[in-house]
Length: 174
Image 1: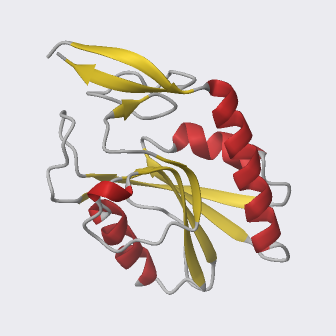
Image 2 (image 1 turned 180 degrees about the vertical axis):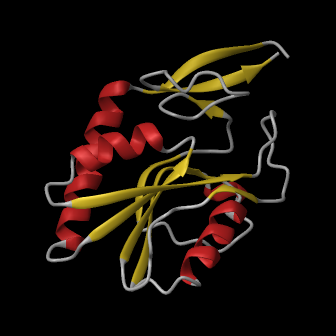
């Protein structure tokens, strides 16, 4: 399928927003030990930048889920591809997600993590599409709210491509 890219959120805007989120997280988690759980693959760029903006000790872990095949529309079923190797019991967990779309994947993840008895679970999402929400998900730290558009860059992909862009681009299909 042919497509083109149009820059949507600039590298400078991303840098400013990530710094702002880092400050809010430090303020909310002072005197606590935070385990940041990045949702692979899309969140790894955001997580790397975000943790460098958090001026306190943090630990990181990763989990991989899939609800997309190679297309641009969620399949509707969530699969756990790779689980975190950290114990969550009694921990303050900050889930770091690239984009919250329908909320189904994140709802599945929160239920999965909650069963492991953490003290708290909060969500930090780089992008939030509330217009497509099917699950009632509370995003505690939100980067940018966007409309129902397919975007790539800064870790987000289309069929495995464009994760390396330093900005967010709308993908326009022709």
